[in-house]
Length: 113
Length: 115
Image (cartoon, rainbow over the protein chains, first blue to last red):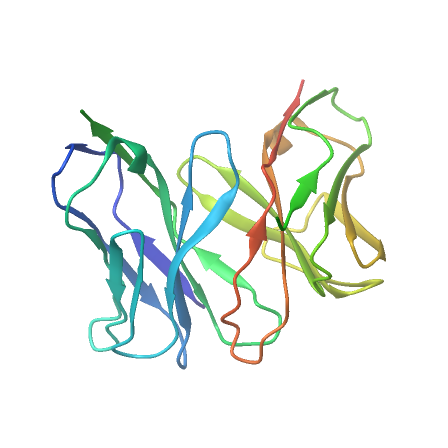
């Protein structure tokens, strides 16, 4: 079946450091890929997405590229801020009308001043 | 501002009680979802609905049921709560897409504790 694997956290960084959170997936066909973010005390919100191979999703300085050859969708940001501290979830959708998402386990990011 | 609201942020119930978790969305979305979130396990889909009165089992439906009598409202029911159902419950909604690439909008979650 479909699955998503992402690196365990927490990831602890100083402000302005470079961020990478790894995500790999297993799926049949051509899924859409997503990063969702959960700030403390809130529900998840979409950060970015990519719907086909070599697409790059970007938002708020975060980027991720859909790499079909390595089945990966790693999240990157060049300079993190304290306000980026949150839990980040990688997810895939198997491109059906039902919009079912399969999530990774989440990676907590802690950014210190 | 689009919204998904959940009836309670925190809930404490006793083992064996019947528990209702309510979710309302104001975006006229056809699809609605219930997930539970547990540390180290991420989000797991319990049930989803793609239309009024329609429901489909997700990955972990055992011990749960759902009701969707109106388009904007999707209820999760724990028929007889057990301690292993202590968790964070998240509701979400989305519009349908043939590519499965539409955003899901999430509520703030209900943290349920079963004693």
